[in-house]
Image: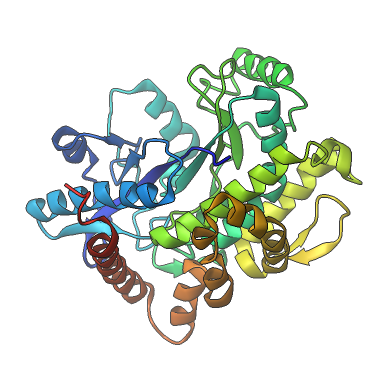
Length: 379
């Protein structure tokens, strides 16, 4: 059994020198398939759910090429890697839709802490009770996915001390979200939050992972992992996704894997443990010291990932997608994007030079991948 997968990609637009420029109103008016975010400096596209990794690769690349071609017609504009306003202007909110009252609320409540770029990974699970258990597990292990994807060490031209400044500053909302023991538990909690105003609408649940579907919270059909920074390398993103899918297949196959029954911690303690782990992963990513949700032992993020990788490799191989999982080794060996950028920064590259190099490298990689793998299917 291979699960359906899809992505929501938020990405910044700007100049080849790394200045982020708000163009989403123009993009959304000119191109199908792109949606505006509350701030005009980033834009979102969504891939259709599918089971096939080869198709997913081209589904990631095709809209980016279309967007790049359009931006080129507007001037010296391109796509900018990273998940924060790396080179500046974090003190200003640039509204994409001034008449939208929900955007009013977001700007007034959170400011530019939410003006970030990221990737949300959606995996199809239609059984609501199984989905709730999957969300419990992945919430405990979400810091590992942040560690693999961290790509925001800069804000306003300065190194912040975080590998993921985005997640370090992001206003997780509501401030306390329990581990839902059942679908009914989730429904009741969401209804109570809406009544209390701690959630403005059903979308206003900003945690590392959440159940999603066409009529939330009642009709749910997928797990949405929201913690990852923007992963610009499609091969790396597919490896992270394959890691998530293989873990979920293991969870589906083994009903005993559940933080509510397999942990030395109470549910409330588990929330505190994973919150501390998220902060540690946002700060040091793969080199973060984490506490394991099962037995409380201290373990490096990279070691926990390697341990899980060994457990799920056979599942990925059996299901025919182990070749997409194996590039995870490269991330563990060479570091995530934030770590690579900080290595350059440490030897004297300023943040602008790091970002402009990343812009050029990202563009070149996408062209190479498209030409090699997607040329026949890309319009």
